[in-house]
Image (tube, rainbow, N blue to C red; front, top):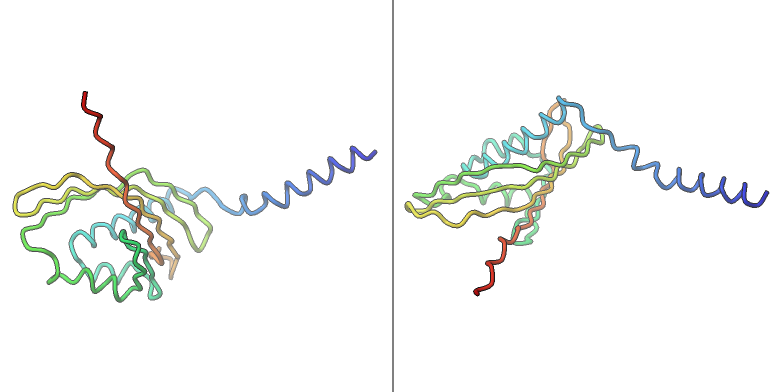
Length: 162
């Protein structure tokens, strides 16, 4: 009899503790495509120093943690991407892959790998990658980015000399 109560207690506790996991739903194809699109728009707008596009796709209360670990409210982020601040003779090619998307209805979390190839004055720098976590919020049926956190990915260590 005690074993029955113990098993019942364990079952009830496991349901209570795992309940929040079930609140997350797998994004439907349309939602997933919209979230991937807004993230790619963000990366493209940053690479192009397109402030108007960044204003359109970020929320008014946007906050980011930059790759340097700095806390940047929306105005500081927008100021960084003023077109006149873009270095001359610089070309940025970017790619986003390895998407992980969690949809919670009115907000979603998107984790992605960002890859960059930067050419300055005709010289190509080694490729760089970072992980980004975006918190997206639905506003008037459109997804916007409310927060971003960037973390650099260290390039693979060179093989030891033989």
